[in-house]
Length: 161
Ligand SMILES: [Cu+2]
Image (cartoon, rainbow, N blue to C red; front, side, top):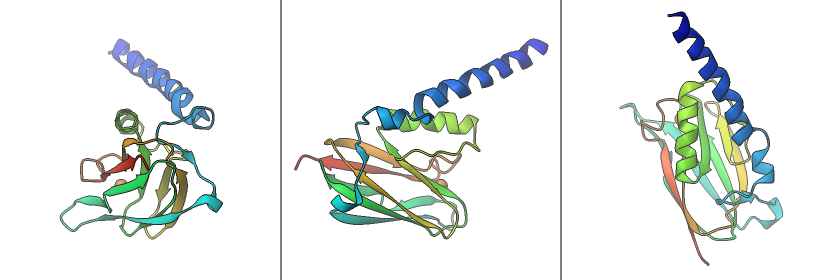
């Protein structure tokens, strides 16, 4: 019993800093992400409006759930949370998002301050200006526990111009 508790503490303490070092302590500023980088407002070519909401049957979703952009394009992603719960948006390569999801499941109150994510309270709006530097298939999701499973995920197709 005592060993189990100690082990749990070690795991918890061990994981948190490792995660912080990997993704939350400015790594995004120094490492190039495959999905791109924060864009300059002056280079915005178009705006994509995305709503976050819950349905009466318990489903949660992003509308639209597919975003298509051209490689090199700078987009203003404009979000509105039309639901009654907090929602977030994070975009990246799928394995990274799923890894992040596993960490969120362990630390549900974790808040992000990454350029590729945004969290909105009910009724709030916000935006991310982003340059999708490379062609490829990427994903976005809400990683608040349970939301991904309820449908809060989508795809970003970045095609070569
Ligand atoms: Cu959500």
